[in-house]
Amino acid sequence: MKQLFRVVKCGEAFTVKSEKSESGTLNKRNVVLQEIGSKYENQYAVALLGNDAGCQFYPGDLVYAALRFQVREYNGQAFQDITAAEIIKFN
Image 1 (cartoon, rainbow, N blue to C red):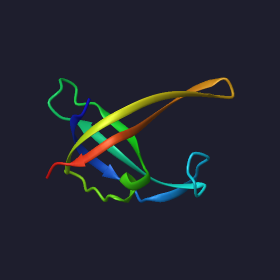
Image 2 (cartoon, one colour):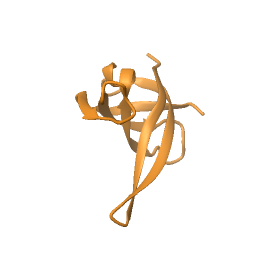
Image 3 (cartoon, rainbow, N blue to C red):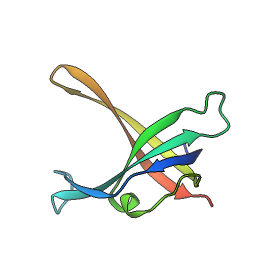
Image 4 (cartoon, one colour):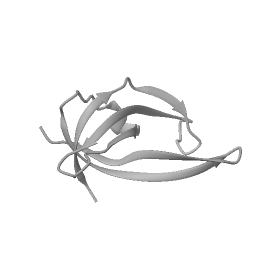
């Protein structure tokens, strides 16, 4: 489900190793998104992957995004990853 967010912060794009990519690398960019219209207006640190990582966003931009929440285990600890399954600039 897509939801409306405001961009709080947008980091620089960088390349990471990826076994899922044919080239062995994947573009990645981290952004902080804030909910709009909800009671608490939560913020999320979201990873943009692939072509989405090439998009530049600025603080205050409005976007529709579908977030995907995943949990992975490493050395007996659980970590949550949030990625944008889809992100569209609204402005």
